[in-house]
Length: 102
Image (cartoon, rainbow, N blue to C red; front, side, top):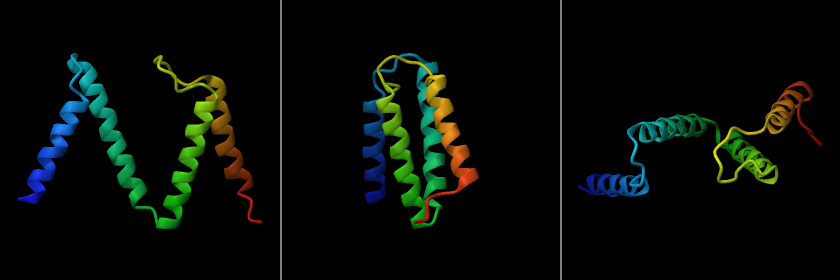
């Protein structure tokens, strides 16, 4: 019985959060992204705790970098090529050079 109540509450919260989306294609777009987010979070949850903490620390670094580069404004756009190149360059350098293991 409690599970059904929790489900109904969550369903109500989702419907409330999505209530202003009038176009079906826009709703499907958001739902596809939410599904991808769910799958990503499930994959992250499979990481050992130590690696999960590292993952979350680095997701914050990416978020903060995007914020500082003014990539997270209200206008809809892809991230700048400059920001994309920098992030992927960092991934490449860390893969090549490893990490600081002071």
